[in-house]
Amino acid sequence: MRDQEPGSPATRQARRLSTRETAELLGVKPETVYAYVSRGQLTSRRSEGRRGSTFDAAEVEALARRNKRESTTGSAANELTVRTRLTLIDADRYFFRGVDAVELAQRHSYEEVAEWLWTGTLRPGARFTAPRESREAARRAVAALPELTSPVDRLRVAAVAAATADPLRYDLSEESVLGAARSLIPTLATALPLVRSTYADGEPIARRLWGRLSHKLPDEASLRTLDMALALLADHDLAASTLAVRVAASARAHAYAAVSAGLGVLEGPLHGAASGLAHRMLLDVLDRGGAGPVVSDELRAGRRVPGLGHRLYQGEDPRAQALFAALEELPEARPALAAARDVVATTARHTDLHANVDLALAVFTASFGMPAEAGETLFAVARTAGWIAHALEEYGERPLRMRPTGHYVGARPPQPLPAPPGQE
Image (cartoon, rainbow, N blue to C red; front, side, top):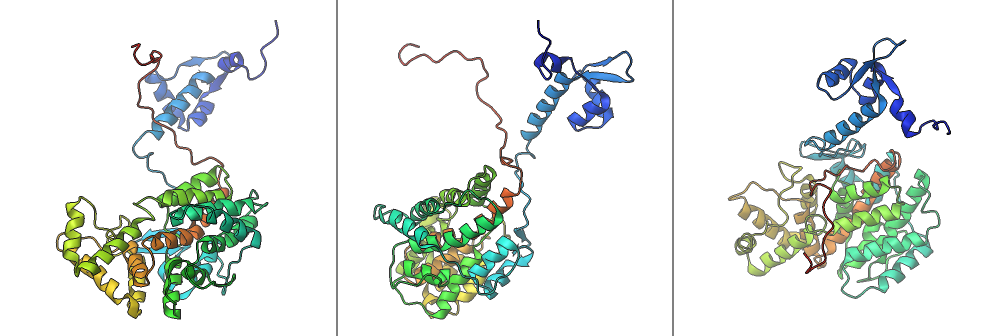
């Protein structure tokens, strides 16, 4: 008969641990080890030739696993927290790497704000360009979609297509991921169908997007407002779509796949699609001459009034404040801006909800003849910058750490095999 191999079950079960080793494995003080003994959760034994008590290694490891499971099912452990250096939301303001995000958006372009999020370095005059192979792959893929495909579906297809044109997509080094990001964002912006004149590659993202969203000719003030909106939306802590991106990055999905995960979550009505609901509401207010009947209809149908309230802000969303201030300078925005203020004033009679960025986006998109889905499109392209920043952070963490433990609440095994229908 052969001797037991080192590390085999029999050897492991026979191994004894000292009090100090047991405490280290359990992550407790030595006194707590003896508390476990007094409660019957551990068995101690005195061994000849050794000082103090010893403990069965298998029993200690089983207790450690049990303690870990119980700690993850507690109410406090259910609140997932992620350490990040990117965005702080505090006292009705938000900051990108410690700098006021509204001031950044007011003074710098979307591309410059994206670079700040990614690298912590401001690159004046930053412009993003995409290789022809990436643009063509995305355009061909998007062109093959049905006519009524939603903009976010088009963007998701464009992201996947762009990935196939990048042979370096599996290189997760910072340099490679940043190269992919600077290519992907303009690819997304130009993959959507054109509405008016073509803009050259190398133009600001805001100008290239305008031609996909509005028939109207933009002036510099309206383009600057669009650019500021993109910068304001670049990141916003761990929104649902951003968490999806970090989960994908934790599994070491490449940047294109991580962005695709974010786009999938963004499409929900409680996230990126919320501005479309506010857009339609504002058009209804303008058509009916006042917010009263429109708000009444929303509440009567059991729906929340779109564009109001944000769980992270007690007062008005700072992104909405900045956009409203810019929209006040645009003559085209006056009717929709008045409609939005009417909605806020009407609901303020009975609730303490303030305008959020979805309402401000709706004012912008409605003012320039853009479709209701335009706000969601702007949100998706803008937030790609933040998603890349979070993916970069996550690539620097332990792989697969975004793996919560399930708390099983179903029927306890063993259960009988299910019988086929009609043979119960």
